[in-house]
Image (cartoon, one colour):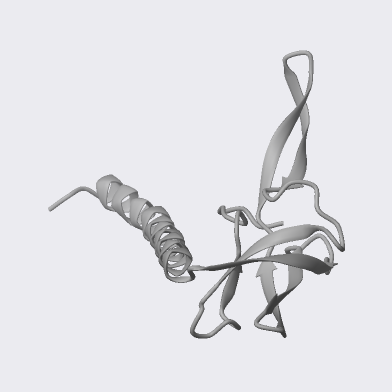
Length: 134
């Protein structure tokens, strides 16, 4: 039978590793599903940013884009993915700058939309890939 110290160490390792494994599994599934959708959504069109919504510091940015397929207008809404870049004073990091993975966008900016030709209301914003949300 293991000592009390080893049992405590195993319990703490379990407490830390189980949630980490669950988070990594969810991220992996999410990434795989997005890749599958991008492969299946063979239609491409140019859409336009209609809104960029921010609900405060504790909530992610949301991009709403509109696009047209066969004369009919649709909307796609996605959480904006971001990238962090260190702000440095010489070699010393003093902060970080967040920006959209899509680059500098504003209302009216063009975006490439991938959609399902069979069901054009199913769509994704091309290039809005990543793990971190704005």
